[in-house]
Length: 331
Figure 1: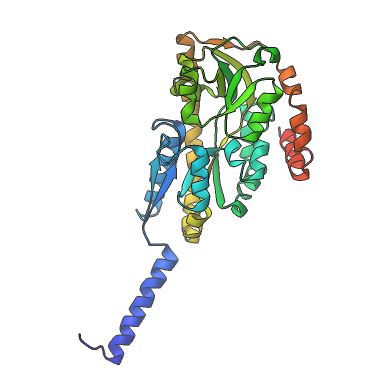
Figure 2 (figure 1 turned 90 degrees about the horizontal axis):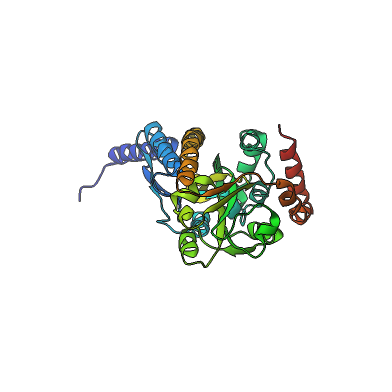
């Protein structure tokens, strides 16, 4: 092996340090980030993640890429949230009701009958309140990047039309794996059955459950409408989706790359909303054409009044009570 003289060693050391500094300052280490989504490949949130990935690849000069695992390829939402928290998954699109098991503020956004309309929800999420909530994730192992729309969730079943709270008595209704959602369904007189999203179709087809609750696209794209022909527009929650990145992945990014990721996420949110509106309209038409009975003329007041105990419990937490009050005041 040749031996370097002092001058050559010095030059080699300078070059090595310069390369290290270049990597550190530019974040030049290329990386593929894994993103999880339980929805199907053509679903708006999956399309939005891919759109975000294209933006990041372009702005980072190809150094960073996002590989999207859709259709529960990395597990059900509860599992992927835990994996994201541990750093095994880099990015995750999830509903706020499920991540609320880890991040307390998310439970407020999932509260039944909190938002007056989709416009009200968007005004909250696009303003200071939304920014504050996204910035509250870090102590729990995540960094909040943006919100995606999820429409309004309503109750559907294959037993009978639900026109009143009394019609829900005794029905076995699937809910997300969330204690808040179970409390809501019990308050309405139904029996909540916590099931992973991917098991709902089998549950409906085999009559292990009588119904479930979800938005129009989820009701149709999963074929739930083929086994649950009564869809009641309770619109009990308008809880959004949230896109998070694991704290471990976030800390691996340079300050400049963090800006790229945040801006790409925000742009993907606007992209997703456009795709969502189109899919929602298509899904409703498809359900109607298939003969689903859509119950619109319900008195929502008794449904809202049934939530009194849930709001009383939430009100015992000063932070949650203050956030609920602030949300209600947004025009």
